[in-house]
Length: 425
Ligand code: IMO
Ligand code: MG
Image (cartoon, rainbow, N blue to C red; front, top):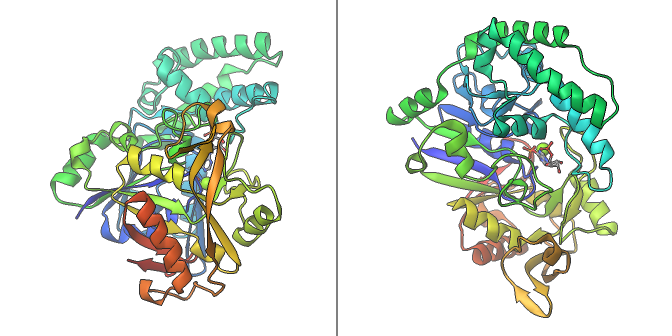
């Protein structure tokens, strides 16, 4: 059994959960290691559809266990609403969901502060999911105000800590944003109660995972967001606040890099982005509308319309490099089925020169012109196809060109949302 990381190669929403769900067949444990309830991971099996924000998508497989690693920022009320939803559908998480005591907690003031900041900076707003992700990671890194799952277990110290942190947050709410202060007692009571509910899940997940790996069990790391939203390597500052790239699996779960056998980059057959920030191959014309409408490209977490554009090889080059991709899983190929013509950006033109690598300076990026190769569409449905050989020739030409340009094999092609609509190459 292998240790695999599955992560997004673009700006999120690549269809990671579908690939995770498919590969869970080979795994015993599925792990979330960064991000939080900003993720929206949808899986579909027959008539069943699930959207997960925090719990690893592997939970639908009743015999597998799931881990929420230390690198995640956990909103406990969001977690329990997912747990309840699963239980209503006959899926119990008892005894098979493990949460690290080092996981930081999203607190009510994180969400309030984020909303205030995003509203105030409407010109430079990041367009976040408003799930408190940034403010929670900020407190974690800042070290003075972070509250972790383990802290909930110390009911003597917890009220002291919350009161002291909230005092500072209220100063910001009232003096910087001119808002009402928040009351401490309801937060303290709520989090003590949430701590009681979380207690049975709390485990040293690093020990648990390393033991599982040693015993030869399969472990699957489920990335959230995507490479270009990585706080170090993405389109900063229009990024999320965690390391969405492969290294995040190590720091966010407490395993060493030598334990990872494979890194699968999930690549949507075109590109989308929600929220603000640069997007060189964005289509603001009818074609963009058309892709959005065929692909139902609306956020699973916020319902916002996603910006759509052609596939961008320059960002995939970055994804292959930063993550050390072993292979790519290309998703949503079927969304392109009816198009007459499909474009692929192979590189950028900047100041009259060819640029093969994604520039880190957004001012440079703003002046980059995407250079396209044009492909004939296959104009035939691919949903029913289950093997590479059966794919229309023009679809294979398109996919082969991606492989060639990224110098990375394609291991999976997804031709529909359902578990069955998958081609293993
Ligand atoms: P999954 O895992 C797509 C985007 C937000 C915003 C930026 C920062 O479903 O692919 P944040 O709330 O994280 O501080 O927002 O990141 N974003 C996502 N975009 N898919 C996601 O998750 C995302 N999670 C955050 O839209 O631009
Ligand atoms: Mg999403």
